[in-house]
Image (tube, rainbow, N blue to C red; front, side):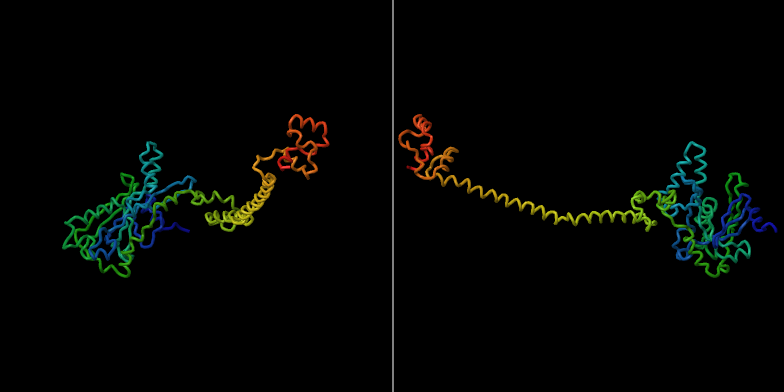
Length: 382
C-alpha cells in the first residue's frame, strides 16, 4: 500500500485544486508554476498555407454550474454564442441579470454560472523529448491572458519577417509560458506569463505522422449546440412540459402500447372516438336519413291529393243549380234532397205565395199536405 505518486504530484502542481477533469485525447493542460516552451500552430494548416486563414484559434464558450428548479445540477454547458455571436443564449441573459442584481447571493450565482471565454489553440510542446513525442496537441487557453497577447504580436509588423509571421513552421517563434494558480495570485484567478523568443525556430522536423489531420481537426473539438437545445436542457423534464401528457389520462390503453410516443398516443385515442361516430353514421348516414325525410314528404302528397276528391263534392252543388241562381241555402238543400217526384207537391201549391203568411198558416194547419216547400217546385218550373 502506498500513496499514488502521480496523483500526489498533480496535487502539488495544482494546489488550487483545478484541472480535476480528465484530459481528452491530445489535449494539453499546463500545470501550475511550470514553464513550458510552446509553439503556437495555425488553426487550419491548409487555409494558412493558402493565405486564407483569418485566425489561429476557435472561440470556446460555456457556462459553469447551473441548478435547475428541481435541484438537478448542470455543469459546463456549452454556449451557442461561440458559433453565432448574435444568438440569444438564455444562460448568458440570466447570468447578466444576476450579476446586475443588488443581492449578494445573486451575484454569487452569476459568478458560478459565468465562465470566461476560452480559445482552442493547436500547440507543439517543445519543453522536453517526452512532450515533443506527443506531437500536435490542442489547448483550451484563456482568451485574455494567452490568445489576446499572441494575436497582438501576430498583427504587429515588427514580428513579420519576409512575409513570415510567428506561426510559420520554419520561421515562427516559440513562447515560454507559465501558469500561476489562482490561490497564489493577487486576483484570485490563474495568471499567465507569456514571452516570445526573439529568434525564429524551425519545427518541421518534429511534425511527423498525422500532424496535418490533427491541426485541421481543431474545430471539431468544440461541441455544437443551439439555443433551443440549451433551453431544452434547462427544462426540468422535457416530457413533463409537453402538451400531449394532458391527454394521457384519456387514453390508458393506447399509452400502454406506445409509452414513448405521447403525441402519437394522443392521436390514437382520438381515432376510436372518430370511429364511434362513424358507427353511428350508418344508421343515420347523410343519404339514408335524407331519403326517409324525402319519402316522408311523399306520403303527404297523396294526402294532399286526397283533398282533391273533395273538390268534386263541392262541385256537385253547381249541377243541382241549372239556373244562375245564388247558392242554395241549407234549407233549400234539405228540401232538394227531400224532393223525389211531383207527387210530393203540396196540395195548396199555387194558391198562396210561398212562405207568405197564408202559406205558413196553411202549412201549419195541414202539415201532412206540405211534404216539401213550394219553392222547390217553383225552381223546377213545375
